[in-house]
Image 1 (cartoon, rainbow, N blue to C red):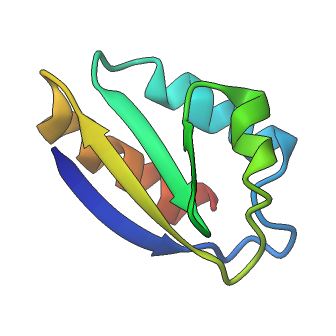
Image 2 (cartoon, helix red, strand yellow):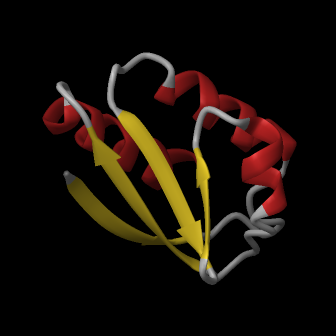
Length: 85
């Protein structure tokens, strides 16, 4: 299991477009990618669950990646967050 924290910098937080792109990025891996915000957790591949987290600008989320390809998945997902969130 690998984890990292990231503070959202997108002015409108995680809305439909970046949540959809994150879901696509997470589906490229066998590992499960979970995003936690304010005590609630959602699987990154589940668009509506991600939207339900209500992540806003300046919220710090914890991302957990667990599975057979977690080493490469955590690098790719962290890069995705830095470039798009």
